[in-house]
Length: 259
Length: 248
Image (tube, rainbow over all chains, first blue to last red):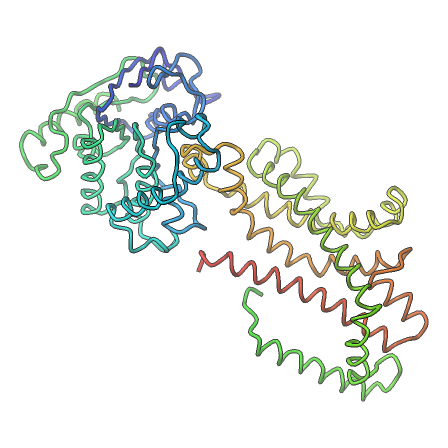
């Protein structure tokens, strides 16, 4: 699904983060991306989301290059990016409204999706309920807890039925129960609709739970991807098992070599 | 003042105002200070006649100036706020020009643009322009980059960003700027309307009544102008409160 070829990227006046970097991500895979802070994890996600452009090399999604965010890619950022002046319901609807604003032009919104009002309402309600924030739909983000805001941000993205979900530290600063609940919802969606998930985190356990494959990025030039195959993904209820602990330990060692 | 004015408070305030006006009239006892008992009936009869036309002319000028200022200042403010390079170039200039009382440019504007409605509206718009420009710029600069990125990731291009982010983000600031600059705008209107026009409250108060010693009539003009200022102030104030609900 995603083909990264010879990617080079640097912010102007700074050393490169990626140099001749190649990576292939297949449809329906779940990936975690981990690395020391400031290594370029978020930049990696922005590149995939079409919010940054490579200096050289190409990124293809479904064999297509893209110069702006793809309509079928969903992105959830660490600080949620909710509109403070809109309610939970309005925020959840934002993406659908933007699609409607442009019509199905293929550039900002997918061509094959007509947004009909009742279907949009049903979909918004479905995701608000599934994420447990239906009762808060008329509240403004300023009155919500971090967890509730993150739920809103996730609902806003999933309402648009993405085929690629990009998550940047989605569980940071959340309590353990909220985190587990959101992990289940995202993994559930990943399994149900063959959703390709790429999750950026600095948390070793989260990386092992959420990624069948774990990409470790390092400070400075990332040339060859460091990939750890992980058969312990989705073990939310079994994080005390030896296999899971060992996998975390293995990842910790890899991190130790790049830091 | 960021409170909703209750109707009872408005009535009470008005009554106190009339009371002190009456007391002052009793103390001064000169034609320049007529009693509200004389002025009010005169006001209510003339507001539907000649005075009403003067009020309309003034209202039209202020609204046109507000419109012109909003339409020009909001995009410029957004541009400066979102493009730091541009802001660095222009911010020293804006810092110098912003505090200048724009009324001093009146003669220059008159000579360059002629003493027409356009030049009067331009002058008022100039004052409001800088007030809005500065707050919109600051508001746009304070928007989280993450907010804009995540809305862009939902498919928003420039137009949708304006519609869903920049416009609602700067609206409260625009209303605050308008509320704050109403009084100045009307003061300048008062001065600008004194020359070469036949309709407008400034003209009515100074040329048609004050200079020919028609003091009670002059007061009806003063009342009308106060009413104009008050109405605009409360309209902006209420819109602001309505929009600010999410911050409560």
